[in-house]
Amino acid sequence: LFCVSLMRNLLDKRNNNDSTGDTAKSVNAMPSYVGGRMLTTQKKSSSNLEEGKAKFDSIASAGCLSALMSDCQMLLVKSCRPVGEKFSWDSARSIGLPFWLRSQKELVSIAEEIAQTIYKDTRNVMDCALYYIAMRNMKKLKAIAATDRSESGKKFFKFISDHDFSSDRGRNSAEKNAYSLLRKRKYASAASFFLLAEPPMIKSAVDVIRLQLQDTSLAFFVARLIENAMKSRAPTGDGLTIGGGFSLSSMGGGGGFAGSGGNTIDVGEETVVRFEEWKPELGLHARAVLKHKVANVADVCLESLKLLWLGRQNEAKLRLAHMPAMGE
Image 1 (cartoon, rainbow, N blue to C red):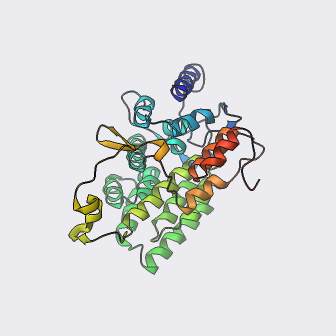
Image 2: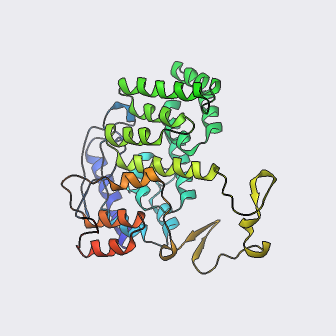
Image 3: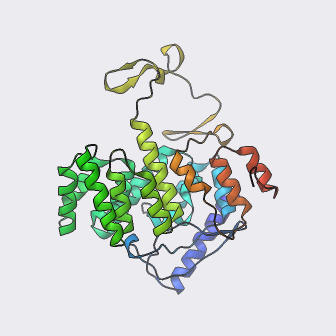
């Protein structure tokens, strides 16, 4: 109830601001946190990440922490989704969604919504490419690029169709284009090209998003997506596999279908692990994003949220009691 109330108050505040202030859409970025309180920054806005550093509204870090610990996350997602619309990056960012949504499956679904929303608004494949590449959904990216009749869209479609990015030639070409885009200050596109390489240059892409776009929320979002995609494609080596990658280990002990047990909650077609049973599985680069401190900001809720994602639950509890985490 606490996090729902905070989020609803945020949405009400944003609606009031929209009716009296600038009506343009804001560029998407990380919420700003101070002591668990909400800060709102009114800036000139834009739907294009390439036009400069991200400007943003924000949600209280206490609300994000409560949402992370909630066992009703699918209900929260449903309640926070814009009425009659799909998520945009602006709406997802404004509620701090990458920092509290535990389900990787739902995160990918929302990334797909965001990419679709962006292309519907701009009809420019380069504006949504980052999300599809981070999801490693190259089939969908090529399909969308084929419909973009702009000159840049045609060039991009030819580029991704003509190159094998796992080859030295393809990887070097992606990297060369990424640095060229950096010089042109097209940071989101540069990050996309860093991720095109196989294996992806995740650190370079995430650093561009975090440092050049100054969007830690997007950096964490992209890092979670790409690292999960790479993990999902890697062979697990668990149990006997049959043609098509099907594994008998997925059927539970003895080859029988395993029950959901007492540590899960059925929500429609999705089974969500309870927070008390949740074990975060962040990759190296997503963890690195969380370890960067916000200068001159002492926010115990934000710090506790980060510690939970890093698997340091006991330290998170101590931090909420205003005690320093280990190593500080």
